[in-house]
Length: 304
Image (tube, rainbow, N blue to C red):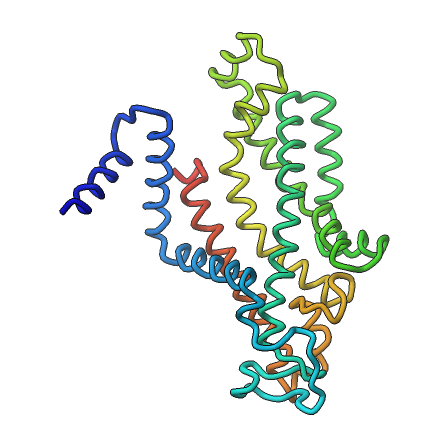
């Protein structure tokens, strides 16, 4: 009974109509959004898959049955069996272990790209939207130049100018992925910069930089989170595309796109070799799309 009473008290505290503190208000809002999010079963499934992918990437050494680079030419192109759950590739390497380690490479690239593009896009968009004028025109025209090229084509051009590899792929994808974030942040800033509370803060003598950082950027974060979640599937596909074309992660790295590129000649006879990393790309991309749709329904104010 004590546990139930404590739980009811927590629910009442979270769902209070008149929060006493800002901490209670923030916790209550977060809990209400979670209740709304979990009503979307597809989004919940996407979140579960993403969590599993992250856990698999973290625990890859414990989950893998073989070292990802261990070769066994006597068992090359072996079908799925008890010894090799998902079969082996053209060099006898265990596909299950390589797909497990490949989640580290793919999710690592996605995380690195997001950490680069989200702050850059947010900074460019908020500065352009707040100041306007010539600065806005210059920043947005630069953004339009990047948006005028397909992401994969522009990424290939950047990687070709550098040395192919994982670091080059991260930098190239980041250079092509920031414009949508800048456009979104600018759009949000244009609707906020003349709001009454922003004018009140400006009348207190606050500097423009403080207004942007303390009052505008936090209000743009929710839309940015939605955009990040929806964009992750595109980053995964771009990463796999660069790897497939030999411009991203290089062999023998167990990156999913690189694995497909190395095994595309066996797609008819040994179908499992390219299909398994392809299914991993499909599942990861679908999970982030489902998660992004659910976050958009919860966080996007235009959906309310």
